[in-house]
Length: 65
Image (spheres, one colour):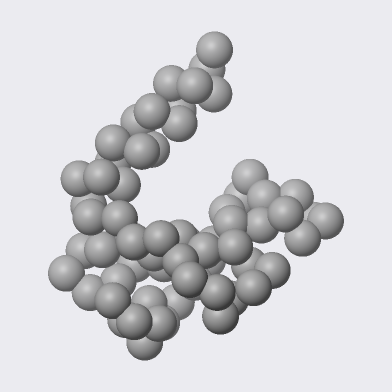
């Protein structure tokens, strides 16, 4: 997937104000893009919908501990 397939990036609400930011964007065919906001032109990760849900579930479990 190329950058044009992720037109709307959104900053995570858990990111701080010191440029330690993660951004996510919905993409074509349900894909989810994830990138570091400090370098928007750098490579980014792409998750399938199933992989994204799995990641979020694991992250939420870790956060509750």
